[in-house]
Length: 351
Image 1 (cartoon, rainbow, N blue to C red):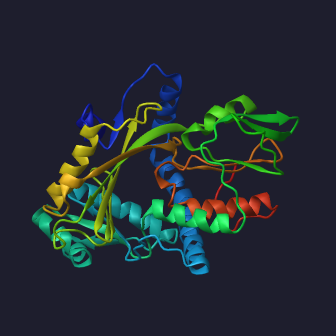
Image 2 (image 1 turned 45 degrees about the vertical axis):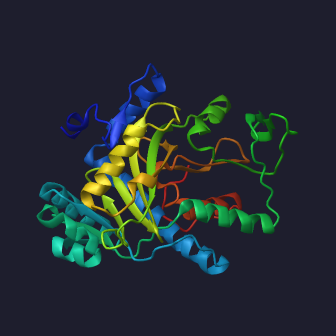
């Protein structure tokens, strides 16, 4: 029923643009299979454990490096405008708490106390769930700052290089062929090419159930500070995440299954702007809104591929979907342990 409600709408949280693409259809069928309650809960447990482990790894990294990225450590609040969706969230929150999460159910008044900007919703606000330990920040600033520190320690980044193929000899990878650069050779290789990972894994006999899910974001300056949020929020009905980076507002979300099309559809972005200003009138300056779109490497279960392959020196770290940065530090730390011949500390089913 929810799918029918959104069918064909540009503001749909999940939009299928059906193509003559067998991979899209196969992925879609596997996605539907993962929606059964038993599978959904098992996947949620995997993602939660990796997420909490990754949060600890991020905090350790921040303490060790002093890295800054407009981080916010006031938690994340999911809000609901429907009593039915709030009730369903309450059941999932109870399950998550049994797994160690601090996600707690909040009534409407408690939500407004946490984030006063939600007061503009009035009686429309049914309630929410709040994870006080969760954090948010600017992933772009984080990545650039981390790359600078890596380069200072001797890491070499080869930008604007096109990979042609990964070459295998027996049970090992021997080199990576590129355009215009000498073959790259190493003791160990990590395949982390996002949505393009299947293109390079398939010739090696490694099937990866990854399909691109295009996501959008809107960034605009704060217009009225009293109307703008300060706590990170998630609008569960429209699957939008609201973040605050100083005097900038960023709203990101939605998923569009349209192959490897990276074009920005302005209608999708305008729908995000309209929803934002509907919920938080006068919060941002829409006349200065900046639009972005990118491909998220989605698996049918949303559980990423992390770990070993059939080749002794090739490892996977891909398929993180919408949780790329959420799971980044934990995935990296766990994979470093695996490459070093040790067992990661997190309870996660590695490949």
